[in-house]
View 1 (cartoon, helix red, strand yellow):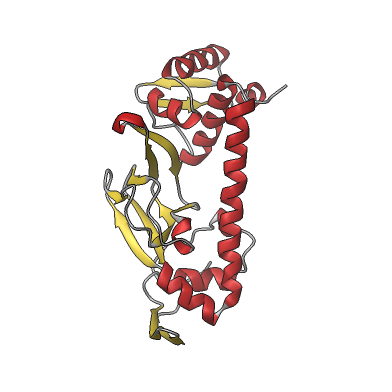
View 2: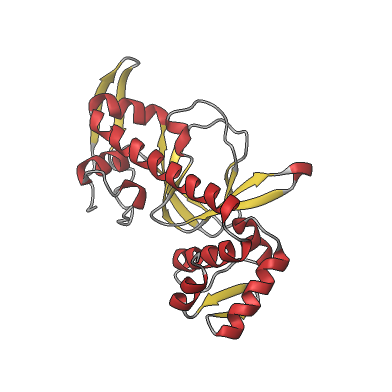
Length: 243
């Protein structure tokens, strides 16, 4: 994306004078957000310019389920766990979000409450794009609406994939697909427990353990304490395909 020049833009909106401090994200490392792949570089720069840089330590909560929704977070570095509450106050790991991805996008269009809790899985950094700043920016540059449309379209596509899997794909295959995705996300060993892997695949720990043992025997994964390493992704991908 390149560096941003420090300074400030002043825009007039229906609510009055709004100042966008363009230097808040100047020292942020360049990241290509996959959700914004179809958005022009200039529009991405404008979005980043009005975002607020936030840092989190491992275990720190970004927001809780039912908190007011006020900002989209673009992940610059680190990993963030998205957890939802099931019956009896039990929480499950819904997804793990890494650099180049985002969470909390509904805050830009809905004034409701958060549907999940997001917690830093490791030390991390985000760019928080607040709804008020985004609304002011879109009045000045209506083209940035494409960025929001792109983000929402990607989320709908992903949800459709997961919904189809939940109804039509066997649990064993879902586990293998999550392993491939998590290996790519971590860029190395998957630092999740078998319980957490099971939660992301919507199945039981027993199923995950059985699949991992099968893949270990086949040489496609290596198991360690608190970590799983995908050694042969192509072999794992073959067993993760639906025949």
